[in-house]
Image (cartoon, rainbow, N blue to C red; front, side, top):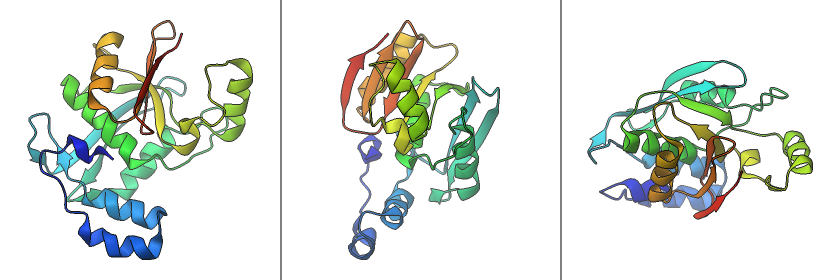
Length: 196
C-alpha cells in the first residue's frame, strides 16, 4: 500500500507465485512487506527505518529500528506490538507493517525524531464495543481492532500541521480531533473526517 511513497517501484513478481499458494494471509503480507524498501525524507533509499513512541496511558517509551537489511525486524515488531497494545486489558495484536511505514513517513515528512505520543493503538473488540457504546465517533468495526490505526500527536508540531502531513501522504484514513488533541491515522481506504 505505501509503495506510493517510493520513487522507484518495487517489482512484486518474486512474491506473486507464493501468493497463489498462501492467498492473502500472513505469509503473503510478510512477503510483500519484506520487499518494500525504506524511504528517507530526501527520497533516497535508506538501509533502516526506526520509530520512537511514548504511550501516554502507560508511560512506556520505545525507540526501535523495525526495518533493516531489506526486511522487518521481528523482535522490534514484537516490542512495538506490546507498546501499542490495548492498555485497558493488556491484549496484544500484531500492528500492520503498513501502519508503521505510514507513521515513519509522517515523522520523516515532519523532519522529527521526537517520540510519537500514542493515545490509542490496538483496541480489543471488548474495548471497542465499550467505547462505541459511549460515543458515536467510534466505529463498530474500527481499524484499531485490526492493528491498522493509531491516534497520535507529535511534540513540537502543531496538530494542524500533523493533520495536513497525514492527508498529503494519502496512506489511508485521517481523522482530525482538535478538542481531543490528536490525529487519527489508519491504513484503510483513503478518506478524511473531523471529530471532536
